[in-house]
Structure formats: C-alpha cells, structure tokens
Length: 271
Image (tube, rainbow, N blue to C red; front, side, top):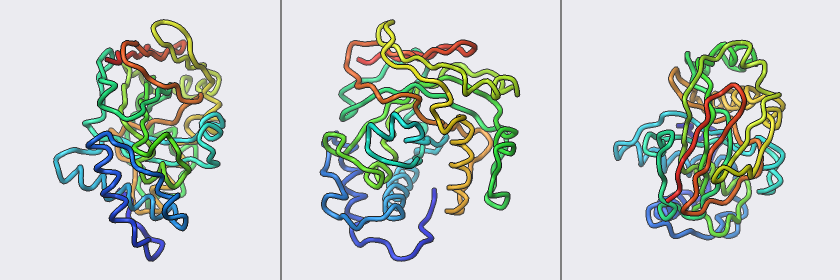
C-alpha cells in the first residue's frame, strides 16, 4: 500500500481510520470526515486508507488488485468531484460470477458496470512515468465486472478526500469470465457499450470512452499515481478501470448483470 511522502499528517488520521474501520464492521455509517476536519488533505486520506488496509492484511486478508474510481464524468458529477481516486481490492471482497451478495452486509450499496483487467507483468516504480503503450503491453486479460460500491459515510455525503479515506468507496467485485487481451480488443474498448441490467431490464449504459477517453488511460493514471507513493501494480493484479455511468442503488431481491458485445456477461444476485 502507498505510504505518505508529503510531510506531516493530520492529527485526526488515526481516529478517523478507526472510525471508518468500525463503520465497515458494524455497518453503522459515520459523519463526513471533512465536515469535522476541513483541512484534511488527499495525502491524509490515502494514509487513512493505507492504515485500514494494512490492518486487514495483518488479519489475514490479501490484496488481489486495485480499483480506480471517479474516472467518468457521470460519476464525478454524481459525487461532486473533479479527479479520479484509487483503492485496494482484497480477496474477501471478490464474489464469483453468478454468486450472491447480502444487501444487509453493506451500508448503502450501489452497482457499477466496468471493464476489469488482469496484468501479465509488473509495472514497477522505476519504469515510471508509464506510457499508454507500456500499460497496454502489460494487460493479459479483459473481463466485464460489476463493482458494488458502498459508503461507510452517512448518506453518501462525500467529496474526494472522504471517499479516498473510505478505500475509494470499495465494497465488492464480481468479475466475469476473462478473455485474452488482444490488441484488437484493447483498441476497440472505447467504442464498446457496457449495459447494466436489473432483473433483465436495462438500467444504465455507457461507452468505454466515458472512462478518460480510453479505459487504459485510467490504468496509466493509476500506475503513475502508485509510483509516486513507491508502490506498483503486479502481475496477476485485477484492475477495475471505473464506471461508465452513474452508480445505481442496490436492493435485495434483484439480479444485476453487465453485458457488452464481444465479452462474456457477468451477474450477481442481491439477497
């Protein structure tokens, strides 16, 4: 996980990290951190995130990938932010295709349709800044995914700093069957339409170009951002590029899916 390299951290970092960790355990949301501490910085927020992920790793969980959030205009407008962020995906957050997720296990979950990529090689900090071509050559597999996001902050009242502290509002990843990342497929991603369905009905859709013009641009941003913190993406990592549409609230009793021509569908049942 990234470590802070920018200087002194806010004195509230330890207590805010503890509050967010407890909110996730109890499913009782907390107040917006920046409403109490308006001088929190992005570096503070990533340190809060890092502490909570490190605590979970110490408890036996492991990082299996990263999520990039707020990469589309629709999501930035929905949450009132103007730049992407990133969080960690842990093994305990991954749900099998056609699996189930209990709505009561989360606070206020929402669904997003995304492209997810599996890396075939490391992108080490010493090679930064990374180019589009370097990232493209490091992609081994492509799949559709449902990201179930959640906010441990009450009423989704969040800005960039708040969501970063809350592990970029990560909750669950439902990854579909993967296909090889051919050059032809990667080049076609911007024109591919991802459709989110609920019980078979279309509820949201968007093109790959909604994600920073090309989903791989999001991974370039992530690789370079991680390098600034001395961290990096590794072979085998799953990377979620970000939603192509505004997030859709979840409710128990529905089946959500993502489809796009040329890639296998993915579904999850909310119980």
